[in-house]
Amino acid sequence: MRTQVVIIGGGPSGLLLSQLLDKNGIDSVVLERKTRDYVLGRIRAGVLEVGFVDLMRKAGVAANMDAHSFTHDGTIIAYNNEQFRIDFTKHTGTPVVVYGQTEVTRDLYEAREVMDGKIIFNSENVQIHDAETNAPYVTFDAGNGEERIDCDYIAGCDGFHGVSRPTIPDNIRRDYEKSYPFGWLGVLSETPPVNHELIYSSSDRGFALCSMRHENLSRYYIQVPLSDGVEKWSDDAFWDELRRRIPQEFADKLITGPSIEKSIAPLRSFVSEPMQWGHLFLCGDAAHIVPPTGAKGLNTAASDIHYLYNAFVDFYRNNNEDGLKTYSNRALARIWKAERFSWWMTNLLHRFPDQSGFDLKMQRADLEFLRDNEAAQRVLAENYVGLPY
Ligand code: FAS
Ligand code: PHB
Image (cartoon, rainbow, N blue to C red; front, side):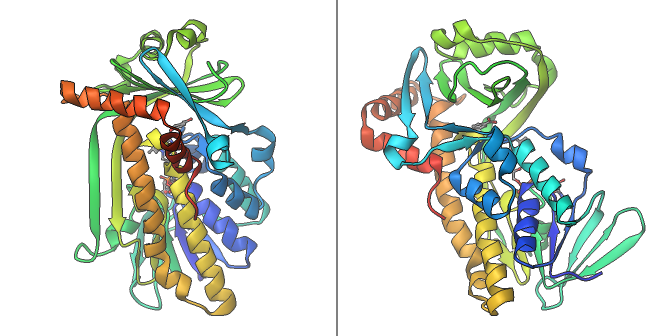
C-alpha cells in the first residue's frame, strides 16, 4: 500500500488532519488502534476556540456544530461564596463555542466516511520505519498479519501513550513535564446545566467546574486526591461535594441525576521537543498535554493541525518546504503559551496539599486582583478564547 501521508491515531487530531488534507487533494491513511465506538466512548473536552471552529468549517464539518453548539460570551469565576464574570466578548470581541469532543469526533468520522477516507481500525503493533529518510514507511497488523504502507510523511496523532513520540531518539528529544498532586473526577449527567455559562470555582475544599454539552446534558468536575478511585465516589457523594464547592445560589438550584459517565483524569503539563524528526511530525497529545483547567487540550491540537496541513498543502501544491521545515518551532511557540495559561489557571483555582498560609493569601490576592482589574480580566479572556495561530 502507498499513500502521501500516514496518520497514526484516529482521534480528533488525526481525523481533522485527514479531512483537511483530503479537501486539498492530499491522500492519507489513518491507522487507529481501537474501534470507532471505543474512541467515541471517551468523554473529554467541551470548549472550542473559534480557531478550532474555523478549521472544522474549512474541513466542511461544521454543520452539526453550527446547529447544536452554544456560544459563550463569558465565564463565572467563583471563590468560596464570592463570584465575578469574565466577559470574553467585551475584552476580545470573541466568544468560545461549547460543543463536546465526542460530537466533534463523531462529525469527523461521518465526514471521512462520506469522502471515503481510509481509516484502518484495530491497527495493532504500529511501527514507524526510516522516518529520518525520504522513504519512510509504517507497518501494522489489523488482523491480516503484518502490512506495510510506504509514504512521503508520517503524522503522529496518537496521543500521549502513542508510538510516535518515542520514535524520536532520546538523544534528540527533550521532554518537559510537571505532574499535579490531584486529579479531576468528572461526571456526565442528563440534567439541565446549573448555569448557562461555565463556573470555575475555587473553594477551601478544592476546585470544581460546572460545564455542559447541551440543555439537558451537564458535565461537572471536582478536584480529588490522586489516591481516589472512581469507586470511592457514589453519585450522591459527588453531588454533595460539588454543592459544597460552588456558590450557594448555584448549589441551591443544582439539578442532580444519575451519572451516565464517571471518570478520574490525572493532571499534567507536558511538552516534547522537537515536534518533528525527519519526515515524522507530532500533533496534539502525542506532543503535549495540558491540565484541562484552561480548556486548551483539544484547542492546542487544532493549532498544530492548522500549521501542519497548511505546510503539506504548500509542499504538494507549490513544492515549498518552508512550512514543513518550520512546523515544530511555529507550533511550539503557541503551545508554550497555552501551557503557561493552563498552568496558571490550575495554580489559581486548585488547593495544593502543601500550600502554606502565605500561599493561600497569594491565591486570594490573585483572585481579588482578577476580580477588580480590567486588564487582568482581558489577559485571561485573550488566553481563554485562544491566542492567534
Ligand atoms: P487523542 O488521545 O484524543 O487520540 C489519539 C488516538 O490515537 C486515540 O484514538 C488512540 O486510540 C490512538 N492511538 C494511540 N496509540 C496508537 C497506536 N500505537 N497506533 C494507532 N493508534 C493509536 N481537553 C480539554 O480541552 N478539556 C477537557 O476537559 C479534557 N479532558 C480530558 C480528559 C482525559 C481523560 C484525557 C486523556 C484528555 C482530556 N483532554 C481535555 C485533552 C483531550 O481532549 C485531548 O487534548 C485530545 O483528545 C487530543 O486529541 P488527539 O491529539 O487526537 O489525541
Ligand atoms: C468540559 O466541558 O469538559 C470542560 C470545559 C472547560 C474546561 C475543561 C473541561 O476547562
